[in-house]
Length: 142
Image (cartoon, rainbow, N blue to C red):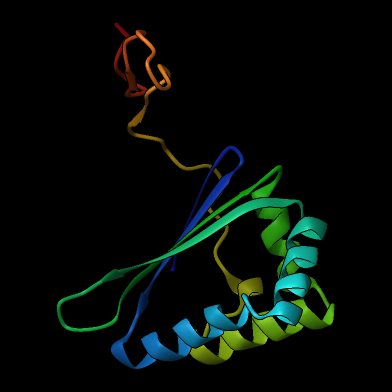
């Protein structure tokens, strides 16, 4: 498991074996069922999480790498509170992740602050004329 934080963003990445892929997909699908969707939304709002996205980057041999993007005012605090929560949904979710991937959200390494090496954002918007901006922390902007 790799944990990285940059400001309000937390990134998690871990290996998903070919045997874990389908059960994990089913777990994520369950979050969209009406009852679970409401519980999920309440959990994330209570934790101060404003955005969460999950990807699976496939490997040729099967399975892949899970990548989770989480945005919150204090992502480290949100993850810690999720791990410590006794709310029924949070306990169910943490237990399912522990059973499937053998890691405990409470035991995840804390990243502290990560080193951002490169970023790019097109600030022009549709039809704008400003130049796109890129940034490397050790490289002067032009």
